[in-house]
Image (cartoon, one colour):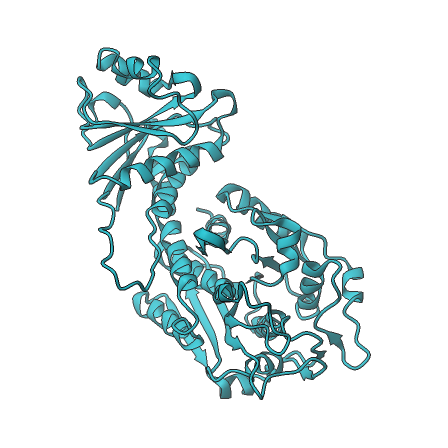
Length: 497
């Protein structure tokens, strides 16, 4: 896919399709009015007779419009002008791309109105168009044997109008947006695969493929013996019930002229989660193939850093295994020892994500990191608290949490800063071990983070609970690619880009 900007002359753009915005009740945008004038009132006649009222997200393809160079015009509804904002702009772009994908249109020029410059500057204008285009054109990597539909024909997209002084920023945004969409595709492809395909070994192989594609990336994979050598007793306890061998995956990206202290991303890589002995309810257990979404987001983020050659050092740590109820599986009441030396009473084997993460977080210490962020589909409690709209963000550093919240706002992939005070850690007391792995129903998402907090003292650390945002169920079941856009924005801003 090629992306570029256009600066002036909407009626003279030579493209297969010119995408124009129309506000509610048929009010034409500035660029639409220019095309209307060049076509002797063609667009005004269409809207005046009620063929296109401009409701948000609606589209109408006009095959031939005289007086312009474009072969077709696609009208896109923007809704009421007074409420037009960045979210509705994204919706309009997505609706346009969806309509174009049903055709054999190979090139398109976007000439949509955009919200205020403050809400959508030249950089984010380009980034949104490229990212939404890539995201909308994503096709699920299903394993159906029927013949696949032909991929969309769209190959070239122009974004504008952009002032000459803003063209460089818009082009940078287009490049970054395309890279974010590509990275999110990595996460979605991994998440959508079934658990019998996307095993811990498969995840390790994907990481190795990333290193093979980029000389700036180095990958090390620890097998069970290597994990045992690192004394990761909590991680090993989770994998005991499964025949699939566990993998601890270390991905190291070294950027040009990067600060020495890396950012460490830690991903939960439970490639299938039955709950173990504390077995989950069967009806939606198939969705537990998505329980490795945190690890997929880490691989996606390292992919983005390598493709954009960000001037950062980034380390990805993935603890990958299955959680199964085998004869050797860990039992409620068992006590295991973490790599940090703390003993953990396992009261619920379905609270396994925090067990693999605590050992991975301890491993992160050896890098003397600038920041550590773990990413995990950790708790159903976070879904109850925030639904599918926000990820939960908990941290021992308010400034780091603010960075992530701001990145989510800019990326339209939002998270919400939840409290993490000492009262929650008190719920994790155990009569028999240093700490219990659950703290009761109240504040479940926060007590899970409080558990991880016991292993991150002295680190600048944040935890993203993506249980409600990483995938959706029902008729549209599949990975969403979140929080890759949030992490991408965080890394891009850390890199000063």
